[in-house]
Image (cartoon, rainbow, N blue to C red):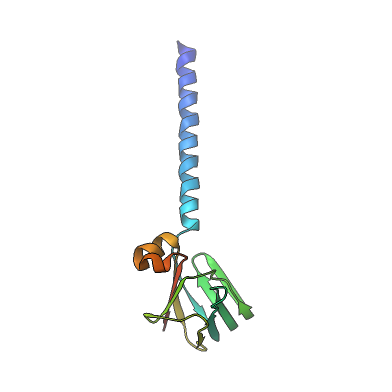
Length: 132
């Protein structure tokens, strides 16, 4: 009887560890695909019509989520976006903005958040930028 109770306690401990481990993996997966906010500075910002990538050019500094980045050149670090919204207005592909000297607030919407806010038009992700 004593051994049975001990085995039951060990089994309970194993299941508890598995449950906590499962929650941790789910949390990490959700965060990986979550919407993010941050700020950046760059000289120019363009949105490629061919690749749907947002390109930051010139002297660039980005803080987005847990990511921090500084460099000088051309960078496509935001991924692809089906919509690019700047100061509340939808930009057209192949747009170019001079953002030199301006702090820019950025919100990236992953697929779920983009679909919720913008419908099917945001199916591949949305980036909102506010020039401050």
